[in-house]
Each structure stands twice: as structure tokens, then as C-alpha cells.
Image (cartoon, rainbow, N blue to C red; front, side, top):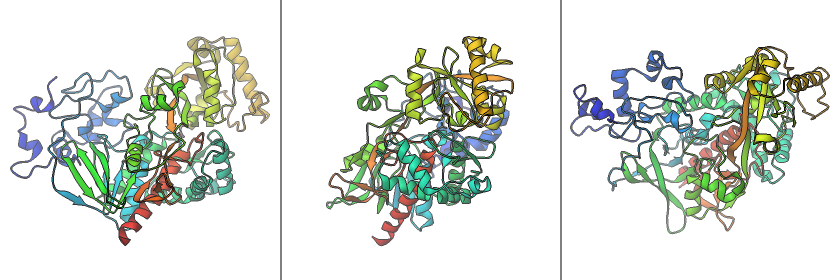
Length: 558
Ligand code: MEZ
């Protein structure tokens, strides 16, 4: 394939993209190059309107990302979507596989200086950076992937919080204690109780914080293991992650927060007393350089997309698909342990029961929360669909083919906007009647009809006699009927860096490592053996705020 530089020959000069003379504008913010792409071709949104493809890469759930996430000048281009989806996608100057990262430019002697370095640009990283910035700190975010958003961008079902104005408006009686209790029970009481309490106690103010930045979290639904509806998401049931990522990106841009993509922190730096003093970064364009800082926040996520590490801790999950973005490899955890951080609960790895069979696409638990049932290849229900993920996954793995069908009707489809995306990805089978659906998915029609009739009777009587499902929001009576084949996939790593309730990273001697904070999935203890759906985004925002606030405070006093 011909890289874009070659395809531009005769149409543009090197200086058109890179600037002229000493004014080289190529750096790891990628802003200069992108500005030049957009100058000739139009914005991402404008490109999205021009594209006719069925799957439109310029209009994806990844939101407003850099052109350079997919289009490369001097190596073959490669569509970032292909990291997760098997699309037959053509791209100008495209290669068959992702380009090897261009060799990093030469090392730089110059060292920069900020107050706070944030490693990772998911929700925890953005939240920490915005909070530290608003507390007066000079902040930089370092992200190894070509796009920001991390795994948070893929979060589907919502954000758990207790005692919010949105719950009150809907008459939902919830409390910090009930959310704490559900979180501990869901986690098999292996959770660090103090961290679980911080999660519950700050959850409503975290929803208010995000709402204050412009997020819409007004729809409130139910996830497995929750005693009441407390999972907040945009009106109409759109996916939470893509929405809050846009909000966080916009707020970071409004504050002019320095974000560098394609940049990997290779080392956390310490002084002789073991105090953290900054980071060493390898940037695609910038080469290796140092950023001196008064505090460093690790917000680089978990390791579900690192199959070797998953299999190391849990050999039984070897070869299982994952719902995670490709950057979730646990590098932040390694950076922490390299400076003496202790780890907690590394073996606790969550498999999510409903990843679409043969794909990496998560089918949100909100589909079950809004009324879908799980049916096996004999056309029968086999589990309370709202049990915790560990139990639902185990039940699916015990079925023939280690898979099941998520069955729902048009009423459920209409209640949750994000379901439309599964149709777009051709993951859904359908029928005008249950009999037609049964034929499409090759299960006995009589059994499927009897299963749905018995479930609907339970909904009418408000009692699921067979499986004791605690919430029965809708009967399945509105044609068409739909099914998605699902299998469990590696979804979340509960273990990670050991932290205090102030988000300080703890060393093996139980003391906090001075200047080092962590937030989000790369930390251990909040969720114990099993995380409840909706507690992840809640954790990223709450602990991101705590880490950002405390890092900025430390920076002010040193
Ligand atoms: O918190 C999660 O992992 C979540 C809500 C996932 C989902 O099923 O949507």
C-alpha cells in the first residue's frame, strides 16, 4: 500500500502538512496535522455526511477523534474500528494490518515541568485532569493509544449512583447504605469496605459533577445485583460511555488541557527518598523525554485486553473474547509496581455474560435490565437474568454450546436507544412471531412460546416463580421479536494497585508512595470478587475527582 504521503504527491507539499522552516507543527497532540487534514477535506462530521458506507467510519461511537487515529502519513493507514470489529473496510493508503508504530523520534534532552501528570485518557484520567486543573494545577495527560476515551468510551449501561435528583424525580427510594450493601454483596464481601463506602457516598455528587459539565444522566435503569434502579444514562437509554467521553473531551479542550496521544509513559521517576518526581515518556513524534511533576496519577485502566496476563491469573479464561479496547493491557499497573506499589485482588477478573457470539461487542446488561430474558438452545430460561455477572456467566457456560440467546421484543428495543447499534452491526435475528424467531435461531418453537408465555404470566403476577428475578419491567408481547446469541467474555479486572480512600498508591510496607495517586480500573479493592454493572463509570468519576483534588493539593504545598 501507498502511505498517504505518496498519495498526496502532486496535490500537496510536505510543508502543507508539516509546516515550513522551523515551524514544524507535528507533535503528539496531533493538532497541527489534523488541522491541515480538516482544512482540505472538511471536519469529521462533514466527512460523515459525505460517506455512503453502511458502516460509516466517520460517524462512529468513537466520537470526535483525530484524523490521524486511522490515516497515517508515512506508514500504511489502518482503520481503528478494525481493532474490535471485523468490517470489510477500505481506507485510502490502507494496509492489511495495523502499521507498526513509527519509530519514536530521537530522545530529547529538554525536560518539561508541570504540576500533575495524568497517565491515561479514559474517564478517570480526564476527570482527574479536569479536577486538578480546576484546583489550579498545570496538568498534562499522556495517552498511549491514538485516541482518547479508553475503555470508558465503550461503557454502555450507565453509571450507578444513590440519592440523585434524577432518582428522586422518579420516586426511587435509594440510599448510600443500600448502594454500599449491594456493592459489598455483589463483590462477595472481598471489597475494601472503606473504598466501597467512598464509592457509594460520593456517587450522587459525581453524577452532579458530570451533569454540571454538560452530561445528560437523566434516564435511570436497573443492573444485576442492584436492589433498586440506580444506573444513570442519557435520556432514551443511549450508551453512557460515548456520551460522557464527548463531555469530558469538550471540557478538557475548553480548559486547554495539554493532551498527548501515541505517547507512552515508560517510567515513573523518583528521587532518592522514593518521592515521585515525574515521568519519562516515549512519544511517536516527540521521542523520549522527561516531564518533571509534583504528582503523578495513574489512570491507565485494567488488563482485560492482555490475554496472556488474563490467562496467567485465570487459566480457565484462556482464549476467551474480550469486550475491551486494545489498549487495556495493564501498563499502568506495571508502572506502579516498578516503583514499589502493592497490588490487590489480581485474580479477580470479571467475565460479562453477554458479549455477542463471535465478536467483541458487548450487549449491555441494560437490555436485560429493561426486560430481556436469557434462553438456552432448548428454548428455555435457565437463570435469573438480573443476578450478578459471575453467576449469570457461569449459568451460560453450563448450557449447550456455552452460549445462550438474549430474547426481547419491540417494546424493549424502543426503551433503549443503544439497541439500534446491534442491528446496525447485524448481530440480531428476528421474527414477526415467536415461532418465526424460533426458526431463525433454530430452537424448538413450542418451547420458546411456552417459555415466553410463562415469563409473561410472571410479569403480570409480579412474581417470577421459577427464577425469582427481582424486577419484571415488561412482558414480551410486542412484535417483532428479537434474539442475539451471547457468550461470556473478559470484561473487567477488579484487581490492581492498592490505594487509600484518598487515591494515594500504597507500597508493600503499607505506606503511601509520596506523589503517586491512582484512579479507575487499574486500582484494586473497590469491587471485591465481582463488580456490579454501572459501578465502573461511578468509580472512574469519584476516584478521578479524589485523585485530581489530592494531586493538585500536594502540588500546591510542595
Ligand atoms: O458497568 C458495566 O460494565 C456495564 C454497565 C456494562 C453493561 O453491560 O452495559
